Image (tube, rainbow, N blue to C red; front, side):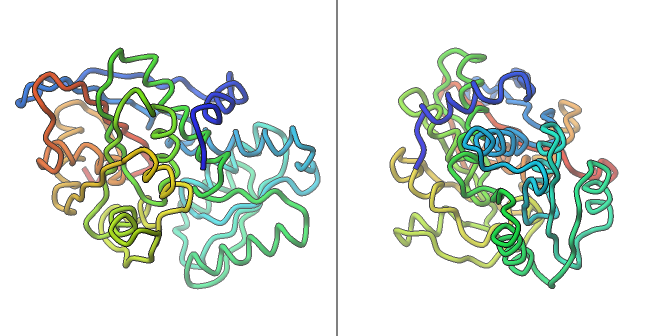
Length: 310
């Protein structure tokens, strides 16, 4: 469980190390709502995850847990791996990243370019995760989870606290959900100020299923956004904050995610990955219909994608 206090501490801890990403107002909404885009895809490494990674590693350093010889370890061939490798490099400690054997070469090469040691093994993410946890236990490296650690989620939540400073009177924040770290942080940051609507692909409904079951449960994962929203279950932190804050979950089909991503490019020349476009798809598809005059912020959380696919 995290609170606004945790997010505020993360903001203070990471000040000067993360980008204060801009907000831009969207074109007038047909329903009469006011819509803004929080352009978090402009963050270091192309996603919000650099915020949580820096907060986690800095907090570990403050507690005396971070060792200069072994640094940090993470299991992820995607955005979390890039973010933690970047954060470790900024703080001058090594990063070891475990990825499945089938991890795309382009992502492996990016990790190596940042300076991470990449260890490939196993057919699926689960094997990489187990290997990373074992490595942390054997070496004393600080383990950085992709989403389900308090400091990771609180760091991500600084997106929400920034947003409140940038746009006065936000009523609703739309945020995509995979494992739920970003949603948890944002919900904690805006609690008491704005409501949060979680947007999930129909093909990866982790929070939606958890709310229906009353607890986190495994779900099958597929679809166009699986590379970034492909967690098989929502994290305990994300679930607990969602329940406490009354977070609503809406589902969007793949074709609407693709359409929203295309619309962001065609209408605004914004390039984002499918996971980020999912949040905007809630509006363009009608999965979430704002009221007249409602002030809505859409968090565009990442841009690690191939522009040629637009």
